[in-house]
Length: 93
Image (cartoon, rainbow, N blue to C red; front, side, top):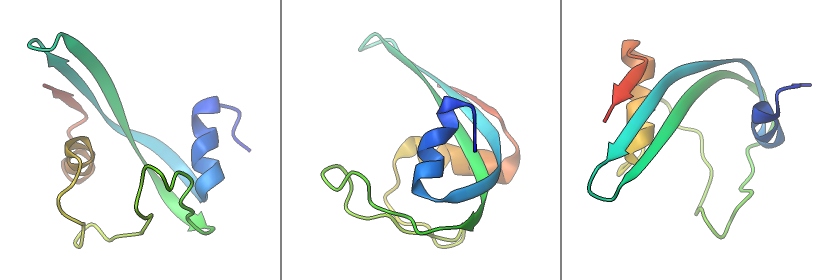
């Protein structure tokens, strides 16, 4: 059982092992005066059923291979996948 509170939501959805950080996105928007940091993780799936925990926010939860991803994709997710494939671990936007 994870002791780091950031791991608990992942454990609630399904069982994973070897959770590791893939990259960080440092996003600054000078026009709207916003700044946020996104952190992408990857893990090895070891079992369990994925569940739609927020049906008011999402249409479905599904597994996809890296060669067959849905489109369009939320742009930060595309960066996380790029980082996973290339090893780039920081995006300054």
